[in-house]
Length: 192
Image (spheres, rainbow, N blue to C red):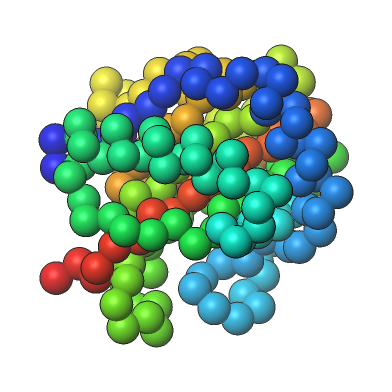
């Protein structure tokens, strides 16, 4: 691995970000869960509203295209992971009235019940205007300040950040307004 993260600053334009929010916000009714399976809801760790977007839903092909295009570039330049599928995306809503957050976690589930695949590369598209909410900082945890992406860049509307799925990260509590994002998990043959 050549890098710990890669990002595209303001890659998606404001109009597209707002279109995605309009289309997906009404679908965002599930409580965010923790872990690979089941109904593990723990609001002291994660209290967000979410919805999943399947790759077979033709209404959202353009969002999958954005992620594949940028992931392939980032993976080639920084990680060289064996990634081969992206089955779904997760739209997330963090509400200031609820102090929504997602505490320190990894996206890979080492024991996941899948005999073939692990999550390898995680991507996050920032959909909200950074002036529309307070708090809600995406942070890579346990790395020095110098080895983290600039917080102001990844907070910009339309920016996309990629990290290895085994890297600890978190979203700090949103204290005012609403933060919207989409996350993608690129999978590949299990780590050996």
